[in-house]
Image 1 (spheres, rainbow, N blue to C red):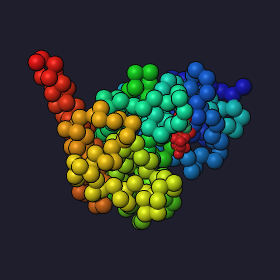
Image 2: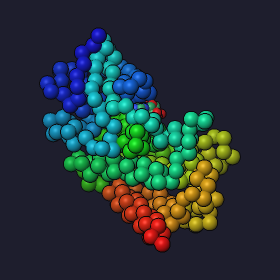
Image 3: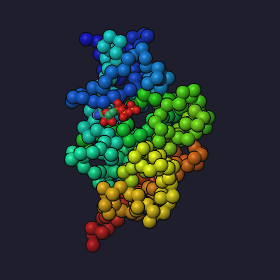
Length: 302
Ligand SMILES: Nc1ncnc2c1ncn2[C@@H]1O[C@H](COP(=O)(O)OP(=O)(O)OP(=O)(O)O)[C@@H](O)[C@H]1O
Ligand SMILES: [Mg+2]
């Protein structure tokens, strides 16, 4: 049996090990404790970034507690293997709900889609606005997990990076992230900005609206990557209706879907500087949610 710690640690981390703050990789959960699969501590350089997320002395790890981030409950070494224990997210991933197959998967209704988008935006906005901007780097539907009430929490900080100051970018020699979600500047040059996360968020927003995967090789040639062809559909109500998730039928307010589509399009701007901040994205989504609720209330009054 290995040595176990709860998180945050009460005692200093033993020297020579990855700091708890650097622990960042979550894997498929089994059992009721959300125990993740293992990551070899000695090979953590690719999935772990000791420079990632935080330097514990600054107390950033404490700031990483946020209702929209999956909580790391503890960690434990089993010989050379490191086990991470995360809070168990009952409803699994957003990816599962959007694209999963089988009778057990019920299509997500509109209000839950919006709630999830807002939760995920709040988590990302929190990371970006922390003292040292944190770039998440691998924002995608499978890394957005849902608790029993469909509150969205971002998981998997394996690729996260402390952000650069001002508008300078990180330059990565090895480009990581996930094709289909990764921003063009990052894929092409290795330059990574907080706005690179905003691009990934835009892709997820489009997935939430359309129920189409970021990458799907079963689509016809030219349509494999969602971002290659979806843009014109995000600026035109009629075109948007054609690509909205057919599982929604007509049970969505176009008054909300259309501004969200336009917001997604802004997030997908090729130039990082042209993309909105996650704080702005969050506020926009909350505003759209509030105005939709108001419309429903007004209708209900009559
Ligand atoms: N804390 C958790 N609670 C419940 N399910 C979880 C938890 N962590 C992960 N999962 C489930 O495990 C799946 C796989 O997660 P994992 O992070 O290993 O792979 P991924 O997100 O598909 O890809 P990547 O390795 O690139 O992040 C998630 O989509 C989710 O369904
Ligand atoms: Mg993941």
